[in-house]
Length: 110
Image: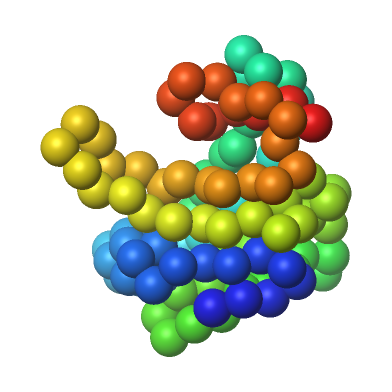
């Protein structure tokens, strides 16, 4: 699923749908970029009850992903994936705008 130049993989869509099905009041998955982290910016994932007027909405089946307009600038061209391997399970962002990233993959610089 792709919109506003952000791609969400099927694995991520499936995991988001699993998460929100257990949250009756928070049915949308927000991805945002905030200042902080060891590399300057960090990704944040939240469950929210509704979209804001400036949000880009990526919708597929039972998964709605929201990205605010400021974060959209930093996430343009990114791929959101969900990885479940022997070491951990987490959402991973492949961001072509990032010039450096921390080892855990949750913060980056541009």
